[in-house]
Length: 197
Ligand SMILES: Nc1nc2c(c(=O)[nH]1)N[C@H]1C(S)=C(S)[C@@H](COP(=O)(O)O)O[C@H]1N2
Ligand SMILES: [Mo]
Image 1 (cartoon, protein in one colour):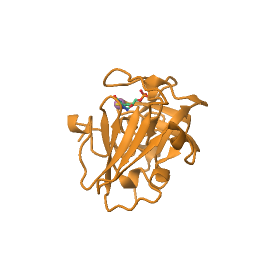
Image 2 (cartoon, protein in one colour; image 1 turned 45 degrees about the vertical axis):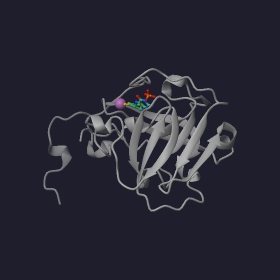
Image 3 (cartoon, helix red, strand yellow; image 1 turned 30 degrees about the vertical axis):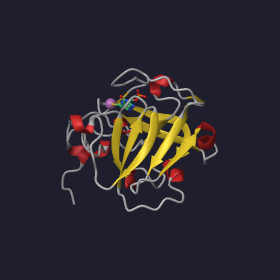
Image 4 (tube, helix red, strand yellow; image 1 turned 120 degrees about the horizontal axis):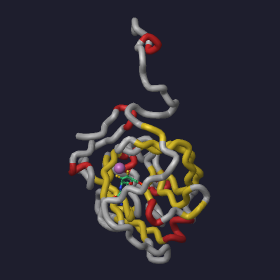
């Protein structure tokens, strides 16, 4: 039991509901990319699921669009401190890619057109927590924001939401991706300020 409630803490920043510590709200939608925007046509786009036993499965755009689709209303939190509240997306829940998949793996590495990668525990992408998103605000996802399709993991810092996503690889042990091997946290929970490793 706390003796001093937050009301007695004196001057503090006005708290915005839904805003993790150290974040500010932006109305814009900044673009943050470590390299040039790859140009991928939907009729050349292929998403690959590679299991830890080496088996792989592919979806072309039509196959991907015939998977279950969901509308997603979420807040975004970037490690550079901006948050964008109340964003609207449409995409395929990552759960749908795991139908008929049996695995002992507990981690995944997501791969992107252009070479970016990010690692995630499966418990952070299954159970309705992550999507492969292809629409933003009712429009096809713009190339600079990851179109044709990006991973969306809104409960973690936005570097985990890999743009131009190309595939998921199941891995037996956690392995750092692009930013994680350059000092970012392996996990990236904004509510615990898991910014740097
Ligand atoms: N493929 C790829 N995905 C990426 C990045 C990248 O450089 N390449 N940058 C990440 C980072 S650091 C952030 S903050 C978000 C930014 O998404 P946005 O440009 O749509 O705002 O994309 C993430 N996904
Ligand atoms: Mo970022």
